[in-house]
Length: 225
Ligand code: GAR
Image (cartoon, rainbow, N blue to C red; front, side, top):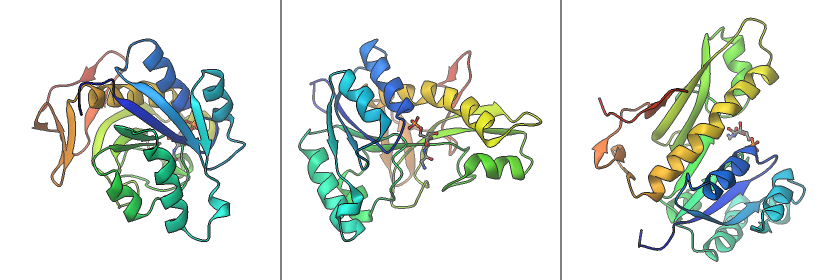
């Protein structure tokens, strides 16, 4: 990354509450970066209105207008690259990306996933955690690789699963910590402290454990064991 303010492009499909948390963090100086654009595959994604309201450029690339994933991803990549991003941030972007797309942005795409990866990649994470009788759930921010929800983890936050939790009650508890850990991960990247290679994630040149950094309300454990 050169010395200019890091440019972020955020991809959304829906509400965009993680996007809003990232916009706020940039606004408050908690992230030394600037959101250059928000791109959605759905024209009616609520988050687009929030982004527009904040004066951020928005683009829509509707996946239904393309014959296959390759053509959609090529169009999506063109829109993103026009904003010259240092980091591409998936924030509730509900499309599986092709290896061609992922390789194009290698080491500079992040995703947030509502589970303690490697547990529960894919969909319905909260239902699966409740059905399994898990006592804790959580969220993970990870670098994106060609393996779905399988890239190396940067940071995780745990929350308890309470008796009587529904998918909705658990999702809202998890979402609160998502809004804390995504800005932290993006800030570490913007500061040039995070890198990814074939062995995993490095913070300040030191390898992170497979579960990444551990977040708690009181602190983030930035000590590498
Ligand atoms: C978040 O819980 C995010 O972790 C999840 O979608 C929600 C989006 O909420 N992402 C995935 O499930 C990706 N596989 P938001 O639009 O309010 O940020």
